[in-house]
Image 1 (cartoon, rainbow over the protein chains, first blue to last red):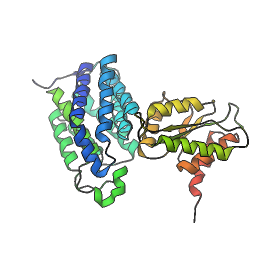
Image 2 (cartoon, one colour):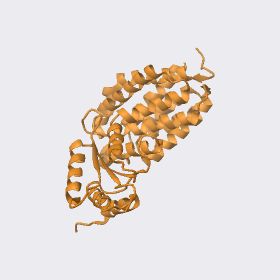
Image 3 (tube, rainbow over the protein chains, first blue to last red):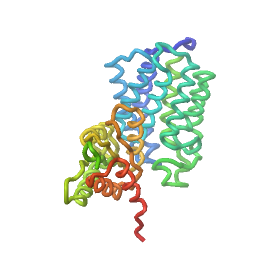
Image 4 (cartoon, rainbow over the protein chains, first blue to last red):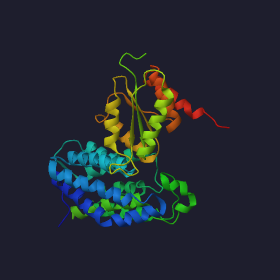
Length: 203
Length: 136
């Protein structure tokens, strides 16, 4: 199947339910990564958040891409319980807000909106690329989405892998200093999962 | 004096016990007259360590007397959750403000100031000034 030319609310619902399934499948790995440099709750928190997202989308069936993302973001802020809640919640809500209330958007419009969302995450967390955070996967993915879904997925996965040699400068991992080096960042890893889910539903 | 009533104080901690204990301490140290409303919002949605947006919103609504609500938060996700809620506009009462202050000392200063009738700016300033208290 070739890439869809326009993305409607159903596409965005499929993205997030696919992401929820991926988070559920990979929750143990996310928690393992987080136990190395964090507080060992990233997988559990993300699973709780995305389970709530899938349930809310199922119940409320929002009608536009922007409304899907706004609802999902709200669920994440309400249910996650860790820093990933407000960060991913802000990502989805700001991206949704940037999409407005049109019923269909193009990949280019999504790429542009996602860059707005990623910038809001950077502002909220006070992090920049290279701090060993989710931004290390999200920034290159948002940039590459202008090219294709496949390019975005590769960029996110490479970005997540590239956090291994980095020293954490934000969040609890930053207290570890040099000891955070040599571990892949859990947030960048979950970000890559979300972008991979996007590429999957766009196939 | 603020016309609407005292400023409300919300204390957001990763731990329900910490939030409740700091609220109790601040109330105790502010006693002597009417005490401003203080509500703890501690722990994750599942009751463990973490942050609950619902508890924060409930606490803010509970202490809102129309003069504003000052929110103090301890670490990482507590701070980020309050900021994310504030950025969206409709989940917290009007004139809710995240105050940059040390959690315990700031809470005491905020409750004392609010109980004395200080407005939201005064409460914020007093809580922030608690950073200046050096032990040695």
